Amino acid sequence: MFETSLELALMLIGAAFAAGFVDAIAGGGGLITVPILMLAGASPLEALSTNKVQAVFGAATSAYSYTKSGMVEFRKQIGPALLAGVAGLAGALLVSVIPTEGLRWVLPVVLIAIAAFFAFRRGLNDDDRVQRISPAMFTAFVVPLVGFYDGLLGPGAGSFYMIGFVTLGGYGVLKATAHTKLLNFASNFGGLIAFAAVGAPWWVLGLAMGMAQIAGARLGSKLAMRIGSRLIKPLLVATSGLLALKLIWDLI
Image 1 (cartoon, helix red, strand yellow):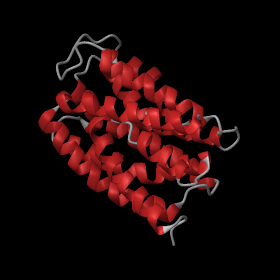
Image 2 (cartoon, one colour):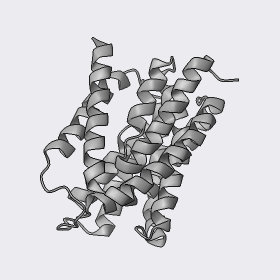
Image 3 (spheres, one colour):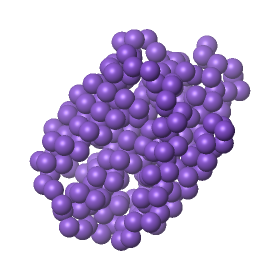
């Protein structure tokens, strides 16, 4: 049985497909699923937990697709992914002991910040640029910071990994998108372990949404590799901006 009505369950499964599609292209699929889970009646902790269940499927599918295409060297990402997983676990453990009601106010701010960055930042294309920090420093500082955020809150973590790769790692937009996926999977999985320990996820619904995530992620990753930043940037800006407006409207 679903943990909510059939109509809401079908809406959430549809949202998971859209999230998998968007996340594979631009990151930030949780920006779709977490608010909708909360609108469906989930508490902030239940929404974050169930989001992890379904998100690992989409992130794994995207990571596999980009790696299979030759855009990512899997062996070089194993170390950073393990660190992201540990950080995600640590962040999620804190969610179970601190209040999370403030999430409704935090999400619009995160959404607007991401939309503004990609809308107004010049020179964001698929060409590599100047590398500001070494891969070792990126792994040591950026990966655990975003991974911890992914476990603690989650929505937008893929976009934050992507921003880090673009602004600090010197990656083009498509290459950055490809390299976020294994890290995003790892921090999602680490968070899921912690949430499973406290029994917060809506498991049946989360697994059903996960199947939809796989389909969305496969379609999204194919389109992203075909079109690149011309698709990634506007989709991320539009999705983040519209969801921010929706959440602000609900708050007032």
